[in-house]
Image (cartoon, rainbow, N blue to C red; front, side, top):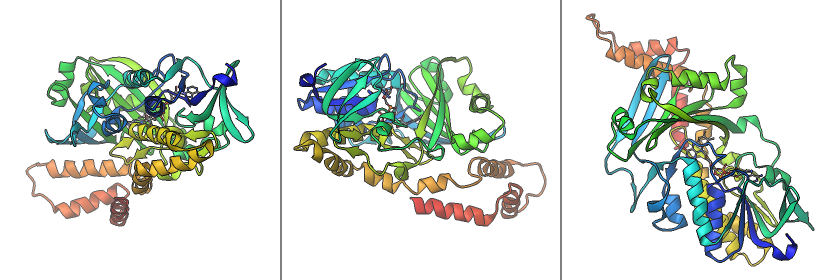
Length: 430
Ligand SMILES: Cc1cc2nc3c(=O)[nH]c(=O)nc-3n(C[C@H](O)[C@H](O)[C@H](O)COP(=O)(O)OP(=O)(O)OC[C@H]3O[C@@H](n4cnc5c(N)ncnc54)[C@H](O)[C@@H]3O)c2cc1C
């Protein structure tokens, strides 16, 4: 392809960030080429699978109604595991999941969702090229002016790196260094097929309703946690681990995940199901402090996971919606800027306006809370001990609950002071 045939924008990666950017640009008449290394968008993606629909509304009003969504989340659940015991909390309110006009959150399967969203961008006029891996950026006079894939060179005024966590493109642009182990988690996930009716019975759901469950205590004390999402005809089950800590264990991540699957409170939910997908992927864990110092240079922008836009609070994870918002913000900056030098500074303003940076700043304290020693083993064990104590009736004279709890705190190798400090950290992070 010659330089005369260049595009306004080339986007590397057709995940939610790339497709949202392509959609917005193409709708405004920009010529856009989106390049995806997978055979289809979403074929290379691993994610938990809950999605907040407001991001689709921001892309285009009413778009969520035709989106490739699975089940509307009506049951928000938290589970604490310890040994073969468990505590489950299920928050349910029929009218809860409404964010203004549209339902607020759905479960999704990324292979379907990403393909659908990329098709929407194509309908707007963006060009999608799948099965191509971008290898290099082309730089001239200090500006990024295009990309190289094999023998092919493609040119554009702006190149958008939407290539996900540990962005090689951002590394090539000299904006990030190699990944630091303590800033990312390793996620493993299985999709287990089951009939819709069985899922509804096991999770106490009405037709089309879904459950989203975050699970603590399933990582053998390693910083991390589990998730379970009900899809239409399948369950997404997974765990995220901090790799540095996992390496110190005798077991592999796969083995810990298999033990989690066999837990007496998890296995009956999956029984009779067929595993149709198994994958692993990195996930950015550092939140606001993980955003690189610079996320643009002339002719080049970073969006979505490539820019570190993920919020993990422990009870929820938001990466897909932020990826979409940053794609929209990048597109708006490209549309509004008068020249390529203005695009980057304009992008920062748009990120503020679309509320990504304020939201990430607000959630920054959760990083410290999630670093609390004992959170992934001693605390879920203590909670299970306390419940066991409360519900044990053996005909004897019950002891003082306060004294029993103090004893259990000590037996779990914790102190009242540690728990107070944890509570204060939690309050501070809110
Ligand atoms: C286990 C796990 C659970 C998660 N759970 C949730 C959840 O429930 N909800 C949520 O909101 N977020 C969740 N996240 C985070 C979420 O998946 C990401 O934040 C989101 O996918 C980021 O979107 P993106 O478009 O920036 O990048 P990605 O979705 O990673 O897309 C990047 C795309 O770029 C392509 N690509 C990469 N390099 C190249 C190249 N050189 N050339 C061409 N194409 C390339 C890839 O194939 C891919 O399609 C989870 C993540 C993990 C790992």
